[in-house]
Image 1: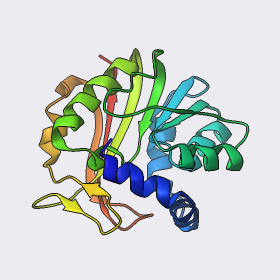
Image 2: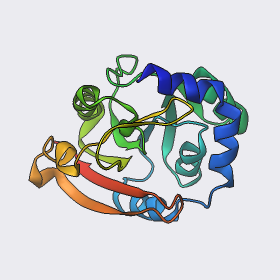
Image 3: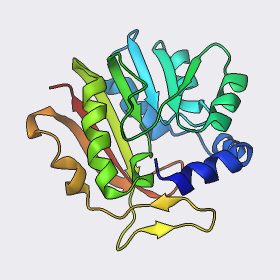
Length: 195
């Protein structure tokens, strides 16, 4: 993870958590998860933040566990949703995670990485996915050049093809490039099956 981005999320964990909980529920994403994820099976939320989406997964019949690089966000998640297990893991290597999952969620995380780390992250997300599993991957689109917000968070600029080219066409179940109903930001959503 980009260190300045991690520092920003750690320093303002409570503030970001409050903002995420105050946003409208991401029903557009949840609709896709209901359609493509396999219910009742092992499911990981990579970059789980305050645990909001891991909680939704748990409430909808998935055996959810959340992973994040920020201990401060993980502590908030554990307080908000004590019935779910939360653990620390770092993109791009995700070396802290050795098991594989039937469903993997990585919601608007990879755009916080430098481009070279995005490729390694995709490789390791594929490593965590069972052969017949499903990966939901999304990222906020930044056009032009990379942007670093005043709080330190990095938003890498890259074309959707940069990510799409890392997966075989036969594994792609769904792709969209649209404005998110909950955040109002341009977001790409990709769903693939394990290869």
